[in-house]
Length: 341
Image (cartoon, rainbow, N blue to C red):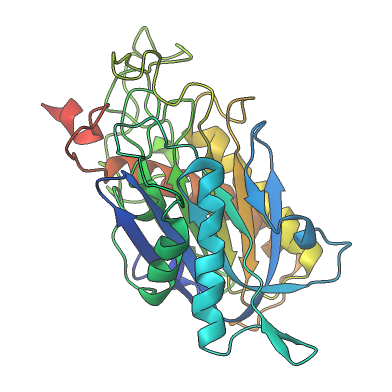
């Protein structure tokens, strides 16, 4: 039986903090996961339109084994600047690998497309994401809000606002696993236009409404796209640029190759929570972090439990991000709670 950690957030994994920063007028923002000590890391990219920084170094055959932070940002390719702001904040605190007398923080990043979401993107010569990244790093803490915040500020799904979601699971082995997701997919997280989440079988308690599955299934359950059209964008908002970007983390002791396997397993949560997912228009990506703080090296059976929990925890985090979204001025799509009226 799975149970949540005390916060039901990725920060239930010892050694991690999360910071958020956003500009409501821009309808975009940045989320950073800071590692108190360098964490073993991996990545798996399954979407057809990714936007990334420093992901090649995470492959198991490359030499850097651990990193200092991970950045999730809005802003499409402009948002990759956010990692520079996080690097600056870490460097000011003397954090980074020493190379020839210099401190170099290692900060992989991924972005989602939130340019056409009703926000004012007339930012002048330089985009604001470097400053937003710096602010997010300065704000990092163990407790944080979900929904319309950080990288989820301007996120959209098929027919609803997206958002920033998180969840955690405590396993019988003594290991904790946590997930964090900025949810902005081409697909839908709900069954058709209903209030029911695709991830319902994995829900713990009523963390995203406790509504289960509809019976019978609605006629539009298998409809691929449910985006509302809006004359201000001409086409469905987000069409041609979407993405769910996420982090899966554990306090277990993992090798770099095992961290990549954890990222791969967490993509199962995308499949359970979003229909459709991993499309050519999505840049779907999962970073994996292993802090090793539990000191536990997993047996073969416990490793299977960990990888199973990775998918379930990610599905819950995705759903919680949409569930917690709140309305804002100039929104193109409604929030999930509007379907209860």
